[in-house]
Length: 164
Image 1 (cartoon, rainbow, N blue to C red):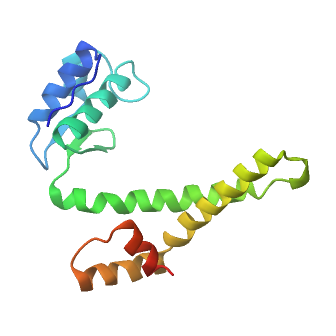
Image 2 (tube, rainbow, N blue to C red):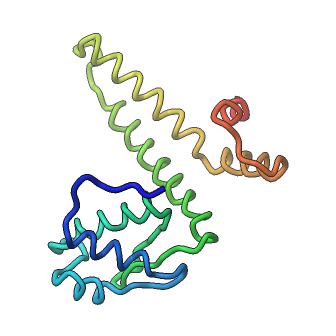
């Protein structure tokens, strides 16, 4: 199902059309994309936002995933590489949740917070604690073994039960 954005620039549309033509495993260079839209598409170039829009359109409309190749361009990921993408997100969740916990526990005087602030503080701390806990390597390995045994992914409820 194709989903279209309400408004999009001609530059984003040109990049989107070209990105859709890239075959899995192939790389489109920043040079080619720069020439296509007449501006630099690498950050912090003027065309960077257009390229992000085009990448998002590819993902949402066509389920096409790209990853940057440092100072070269964008690689269209094969299904094998897409299957590995999740682990980079898990690592990011782990780092961000640990940092969030560190910042939240830096409150010097909890009693000066309003009741609403205390609730938000403790809620965020609880959620980040769950993220930090379930994204530890031991927990990931345990879940991988359960998935290997069952040969399926688990629902949210089933996953939470495995961590109890």
